[in-house]
Length: 174
Length: 224
Image (cartoon, rainbow over all chains, first blue to last red; front, side):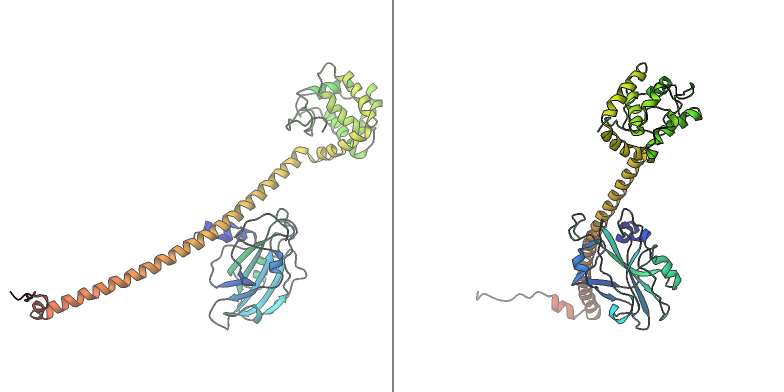
């Protein structure tokens, strides 16, 4: 699809979190049978537990890393904690799911307080099985630097959803 | 709110910090100062005032933060004594400048008397204005406006993202339907082509047999 219609660009995920990349591997995240589609809205109550994540690819000997970040922490108008790391799983074999990988940073459920936050899943291909050390803290994580540090290269897939506090009234249905 | 807020009209040029709530026209502040004979007589009408003048004004306006009544007013004239409550002072200056040039001084004095009667209101009012003044009240508004714009831009991008998502799905669905339709048509055409090929093949191969196929026979259906 044309660059300017790509939801990742329109939603500014490419820009705020990632550089432009080419999708090459399937990535599907599902919260209780509701699939995560770019720009769709979830309530915090719907994303309390970690989603089921299935990835594509074809060779079980290729491993992938999944990162989940919130670039709008604590508030989209003043994201001084960008990006807040919610989940980090490595060594996921291709064609399988997150449950087959190594959870380096455990899933923390989104609890946006102010504004409408984007929550981004990013998938990277690893060069091989590797040891990834968890960062000292979740806030001010930098996906770009992380990828560079572990030689992950460009992302192979990404998807994001919107989430605001449970009683929030903004946003739009997907 | 008092004084009534103007639409951000930047008044007295000699005031280095724009005081937005003031309604004052062009020159009044200068004249007030002149009348008070606090500063040197060469007041300008633009910001390029003598450093001393600007400094005086700046000090005076900055006074509320220190909450001291002295300083720039120590060398002042008769008005100086009344300027001890600085919050009131800064406000009163603005108020007085609302008046005409000639009567600047007397109005100023009378204003002071009014002000001193209700110090609480003005100090609280002034606290707000003072901080705004220090930040550049125009700046605060500007920041607010920028933040609103950013929020609106985010909202628009969310809208566009959700639209493009539905458009992409619809588009993709339409494409898939198109593809299915085209594949069916392709199959039909291929079958037709095959039929035509067979026919021509037979025609070429066995010219005799064909007439038999194509020949119309008259049959007798009626007894007569």
